[in-house]
Length: 321
Length: 155
Image 1: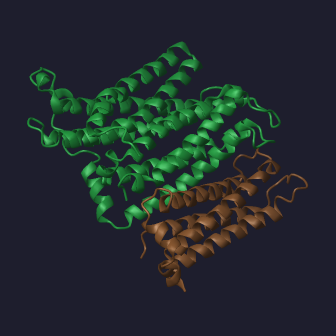
Image 2: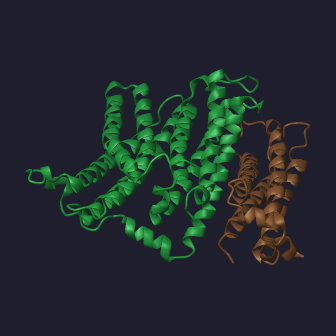
Image 3: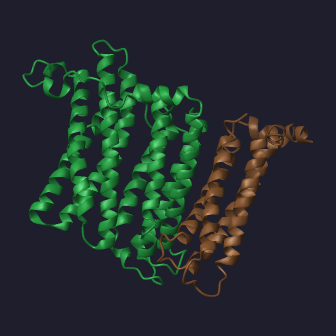
């Protein structure tokens, strides 16, 4: 299979994307605050959507960062320590970001079902988004510190970047944990397959209903199952990141992994549309979905099978175990 | 007998061919079949446990056809994978456990179909027995996936 990106391209992708998590979360937070001022649920929905999409986009930012680290390693003037500090801060903020994105999705799902935003979830997203903004801007600033000596003399240079102390999460410790205990990798693989089955079961029912192959169930009734799909995705996201952090060189240079991440991003966006999809929401049991719904359903199935295909092919097209 | 399967031309082709259409594709189809079969079973189990109550059971009937399709696909691809590695798998306790678990999973599906999806009228309440069957199915299928996945790691 032809390569679509080498390490330098991925380092470039990291440069292109690495401001999105910080700025995107700030925009999401601003929209959310504005929704309180204007008492407007449309704005609130938009803020949850922005936060969810940014949480998705943070994944390629994190994984491309590993490629950037591999290209920078050993270059003169690059401190290995600065890379480790940035990586650990990035990992911590990545975790925060995903929890926030998950809750934002849940808030959207609840909102679609209830017809309005619900207070508990809205405040939970608000608090987590504030914390995520702090964590992610700190990680971004530490990243800037790797190769930007021009700002080092600034009066405020130390505010974010100062002595980091012991990080909450250390990528190196996590890597050791996965590699030094022989049970961890097989356990994660097992969970990864279970999560995949759960996720695909939900995708199959919801999307085959939209396509029209399943009849006799309202869209609202299958919409109820969507959190199980996201639960499966969550299991796979966590176990997948364990694999990636433990053996990133197997993935950063693996074209099957590149395709998998691209398809995953599209599938995630598709899932978001499915969650908030107004035209389908009111579909009674016997009605056919509009053409947009059929296309959405068909693309979701193709994308998710594609994600599975490239995941399974990681050892064969690329070199992952 | 098992060794002769190992040494068959088919086994050599499946394992030693560098073609993406050999071992990688058969394994991927096996994974696809697993995902469809187990995914469908989990959905029926969840519905019986009370999630997605708005989904009429009769509308899920078609899932059984999907499951049988996936089952036959995996019987075929599984047989191919077995032939390729017969003397190892044929004597491996975990492999036999996996087959037993898959058989039990299929049995739970058949029982669910016969007892709950009788095709006549929509049951008003899901009985305790139906829920127990759903929990059993959920556990057995999870165990089957676990055993199958661990075959790659346990000697």
